[in-house]
Length: 378
Image (cartoon, rainbow, N blue to C red; front, side, top):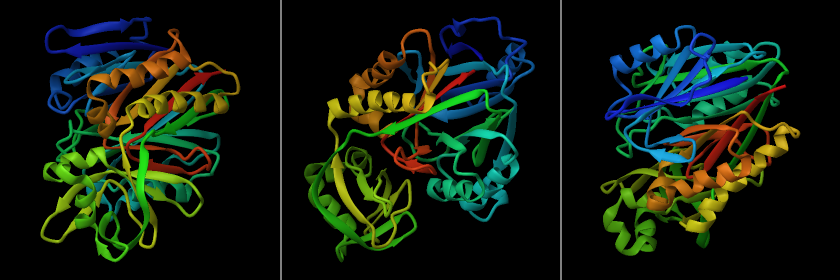
């Protein structure tokens, strides 16, 4: 396996970050860019000339990760040459399916073949219910298949995101890449680092990802009480105070608020909030957020069986970027310190992260986490 990288800025155009002569050999290019520039025919045409034999997967972001840097309004392109791992690609148009769950089922049915090792999913982040998507994927895949990825973003606008396979990215698309064979080593880790506070409360009324009541009280009114002065900044300030969702299997997931409805008194989350589930409010702890990224990296090593990774893909939540602000590169640096300087790093800030919960096997939708996938070939 070999990896090289280029980045694009308005000032300098395309610039080599790591040039390893893969122009003709690369079979996959992962390309992440700012919402206002990635949806551009010229940039796509330039990429196809750079890598004429590769499949190009593109997604919009809330920030691009390359090496130890976090950038905005740029494009990063990581070109990968898998020497021993066959790949298969599928693109889904959300408009052709009745639900996000059906999209997930179609993806897994298209990719499920003998020796399927790993699925990487880059999904629309505004029209797709991430919980339903991963539920559909899990229904049709063997438990040993590692599924990771993320939901595209739009710099915190929560309006329209873009994803594409071998064409200029568009809204409403989901791309999945199947990796096959036993030569590929995939590690994964997903950690948060938020502090919980207040009592554990029970969801007494919800519908999908819309929350109405906690402990029989209006959820939005209760939430505003805890936010205090920050309530005036809703829904933006909600990224600073996500919910911890306690799952029946003993694991916990983090859920971010996407929007509020003052008239209905409801909150809409990036993932489902099941009726009768227990939840608890969370707040930012800067040092623990940064440590969480390093802990996610360390968790990857438990899956690699002493194989050092060659490519590290980081997908972190836009909420973490907003909270950490000027300290945002510290979480990327924490990952770098774990894997070292001989590895190629890429990634983006997302509207949601897809990864197995460390204590279980199936993939799940996460919010407010740093999710890491590592790749190497034997």
